[in-house]
Length: 66
Image 1 (cartoon, rainbow, N blue to C red):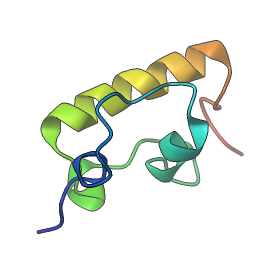
Image 2: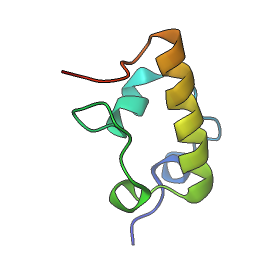
Image 3: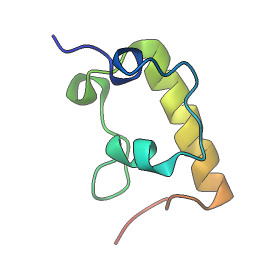
Image 4: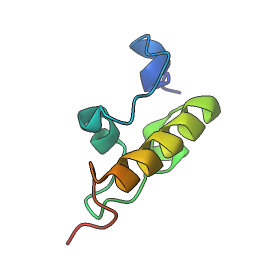
């Protein structure tokens, strides 16, 4: 089992303005990838989903990609 990306890189807070990291956890259609696929911890997955949501509301990442 792989280690969580955020704990491995010692990232305590997932920032919604850091779109490069957020895009790693989105598929080509701009949907979030599952925890099993990304091997992110449950706590980090919740923080990640909140950050993606905020970034979408701010217009930094798209809701859907065509």
